[in-house]
Length: 101
Image 1 (cartoon, rainbow, N blue to C red):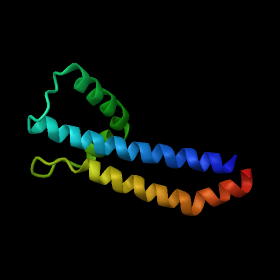
Image 2: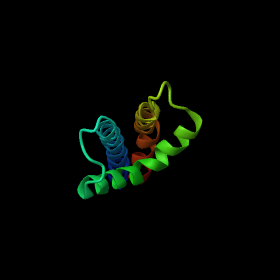
Image 3: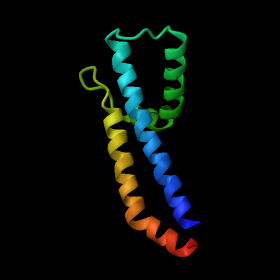
Image 4: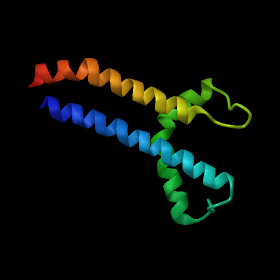
């Protein structure tokens, strides 16, 4: 049970990291007019990515303003998720595995 819970936490963190990266790339493609945000399929992808990443990026965006028009909140969020992942795997996961077996 403990291994499954640790795997689930790591999988969710990895999925969030990839969603933040995809959202940042999609925003660059919108900004440089590479893809059309009015396309229905692209719009749905953008909506899903925004819905998934907004709970993490929103609070950071309220604190950290864009620097010269560049939004660095995805970088901060990625660093924070990596830090939390390492912290979880080094301290919490071993105790969880030992207690739940």
